[in-house]
Length: 213
Length: 213
Image (cartoon, rainbow over all chains, first blue to last red; front, side, top):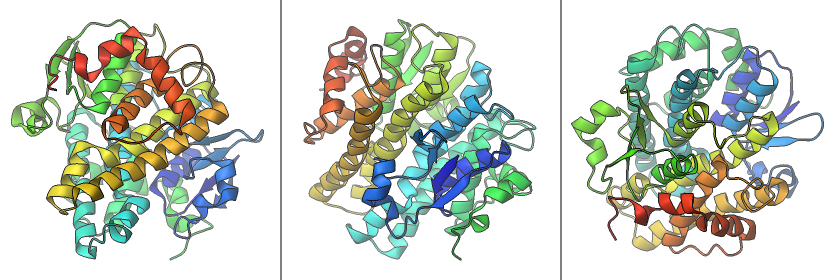
């Protein structure tokens, strides 16, 4: 397998965690989002959506969207399962994963922050306030749902799930942007537990071949 | 079942389509997003995320996030299936669904447009340009992927899937905002086919009890 991704992309990071948890080897292709490589004609031929991550199978099958990729990996390589089989258990995992993937990350990613600055001309302080606002709204909801439905060292029990694959990159991103997150006790407890695990460490931005400090 | 939702919310509309396709009855509870009812203490007690839609089962189990809800309905009421069982077929459906649910809708929804206007003070024209920009980026990607992988009158074949549940509300929203979409031929062909089906009509905003013209 090949993974087109960017060290600092949260959606790429989710898939790298899933691959590491499943012990799957892959070839890493760095796509530099800061340099706009995702918009090149060459990359668009591979992924018309012009986004990372993109998983490419041996037979050339190319698949985008991090949550779709992780679902696919779970079907093809079910050990360990990251999305439970029981209807309600999987719904709880998907609820947290989608809350992060739909309600927090897209509003705060590189292209949206870039539009705010380049097209709308917002100040650095306005951009930071925007970022913090959506993180507070979103992680507040994640915290409340985990307090209500979560248990164990991971989001949902003794083993990691898709929810953890989404939570860790989002928290790491928010910390890098200087957000104060200690009030989200359950979120931070899960984050710290995950960060101590080898698979999560292997997937971290600073351990990728395209990493730039 | 009870569904807390808002007639004009795209994410609510997705779930209403799924419920209609499966022929499931439910009690409709209108949550007026324009009046901020989703932020009330009463609603937060039910859904700490303060978002719609929210599905509540007979036993009180409450579940948020439209894609998690539809996955759950598919597990509990598998006829007709909206997310295929085959690994690659489901991946293609989830790729389109997530592209719409993560890369288009969240950036253009009511709360984000509200922040742009109320906090950042953008003009109506800047707000419209923002909306059109993300629709063009996103539907361009959906079109390219459907041309590459789609077939049949629906996104993927002769029967509707989660991808159609997401596509229809997004296109309807973009048309309401005055976007020019005819160049997305495959997207518009799927949209028109869906709009002619009774289940999609039943789920439409103007057929909801909380509809306001």
